[in-house]
Amino acid sequence: MCIVTEHARLRRDYNTLKAENDKVVAQMMELTKSPPMPVTDLLKIDRNEYLKKLLTFGITPVGDDDPLDSWVSLASMAELERLAPDICYPADWYVTSIFDCENYAAQAENDAARFFHVSGICRVLGDMPLGYHGFVATLDKDNLELWILEPNAGFDYSGGWCRPGEIDYKPKKIYI
Image 1: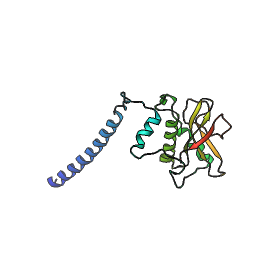
Image 2: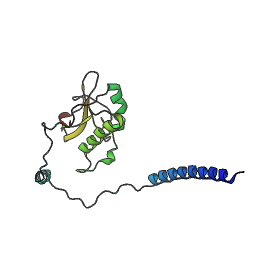
Image 3: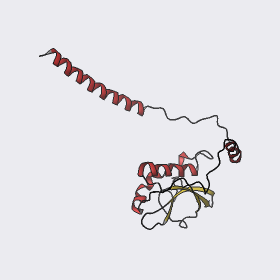
């Protein structure tokens, strides 16, 4: 046995085992990571006060003259139905005036684009008996029909696409 050859083999084995061990340690660290802690010293201010302060920095709210995208990607109805459960989230995420309807809609909009590459699923705001409310809306690629989805699983009609009028919701404004 050549000691140099044996040393080289042992070094390769060591490096392989070390790389595998490092990977397992990284996975364990990820699994044992502490959950995020909510901020407890929040300041709640009126929206108009917030916007007034932002205006002092030259920042104004998005309006019709400020398009967010120059094009969007649309999916077939079959694909929209397939991804719908994945952009519907647990009702216990809801925290009044912190993570509420428009946050659910923003999460669904972002996940639709990030995971499914469908950028045409957008936050929409409108009226329903509970008051002003956030959903997501899209057009299907086949017929360009309008579809809406409630991404908060706490509602009976959440998790599936429906047309406006099938539920008591009237979309009025969309982020696009």
